[in-house]
Amino acid sequence: MKASENLRAGVLSVALLAVLLTVWHLSTRGGAGAEGLDPEYAALMGAQVTQGTSAMPGPLDLAATLWEHLSDPFYDAGPNDKGIGLQLAYSLGRVLLGFTLALLVAVPLGFLIGMSPLISKALNPFIQIMKPISPLAWMPLALYTIRDSSASAIFVIFICSLWPMLMNTAFGVANVRQEWLNVARTLEIPPLKRAFTVILPAAAPTILTGMRISIGIAWLVIVAAEMLVGGTGIGYFVWNEWNNLSIVNVIVAILMIGLVGMLLDRLLAVCTRLVTFRE
Image 1 (spheres, rainbow, N blue to C red):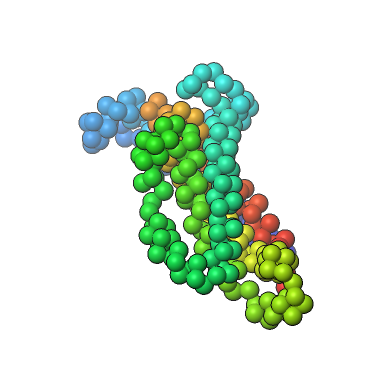
Image 2 (image 1 turned 45 degrees about the horizontal axis):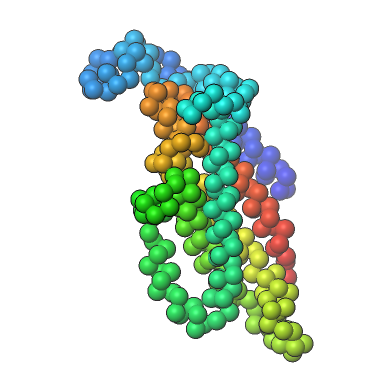
């Protein structure tokens, strides 16, 4: 029955995609020219809106441009002309580095908070103040103190990745079943060994859920951060193509951002299932 439901869901997804592409294609087949448009917008977009054609590319234009990008994704022809694969690689590198640094801080600190009510109460005011701050609010301070745009972007990823992992780790550790801990104490298992053999396996699904949330936020934030700092990365690619008025390249980049984000989420979802056991 589950396989049948998955098949029906897949067919429905394909049908919805076909409808969306059809509506998109029909809506971009023609345009009304520059009549009725704001003069500043018409001057900005130029021939794209003044020659009776739609300024928005259609799905066929997107497919052709996407194929062009994928046929040579890693070329490097200068600072403002790099393949989309290379730009994604720069962004992924920053995200994974910032995410890993946050992981190295969040998991041990989360264990400490979850295992010690005293530490939890002492650190809770600081966490509650820092957690709601937008990661991009840290960018000016990071640029001023670090004085390196790439390192500043990594710092922003570190900050935005830290809190979901920290909170989920602390929650998972604090809610390990008490009878398991009682058995470990009865067997006189040392605290450090108890943390690795009892608490970590029990809290692993919750920790992985926090990691899954963090990687999604990190991938979202890196695009905005790279728009601000420039240089390289998929966020810079989007901003640069907008400055070139290449809407089709902007849409290609948006599509690639969504696909990479989905793959990162699926990867951590698989890892979560691997460490989740039914009682």
